[in-house]
Length: 109
Image 1: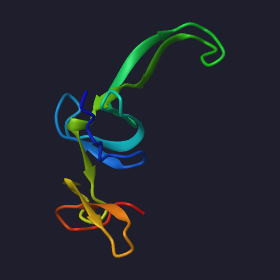
Image 2: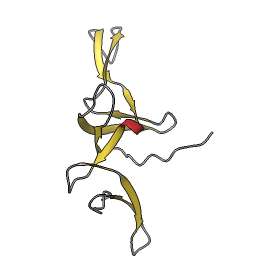
Image 3: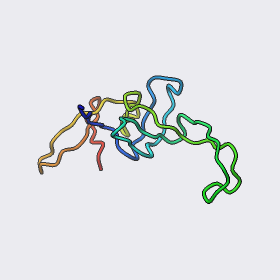
């Protein structure tokens, strides 16, 4: 099976570009590369029934974030503050970094 390279990373600020959550933005909490999906803060909430236990003392219906396909997300550039496609570039010291295609700003710290 072909493995897609995911250009979105944990703690990136992303915007949903399609689907029921279109236009909303949030921070990436987790990447699931084997499923090509990401969990984004305050996006794609689902309700799950939980029994009382160690994690949920009370039990009942719990709302939590579900994963969303990474093809439905775009990284928001910190400089131009707009969703942008991501390119790659090698610096003078040989380090490879992600850049915003629109304004050429380096996204990696």
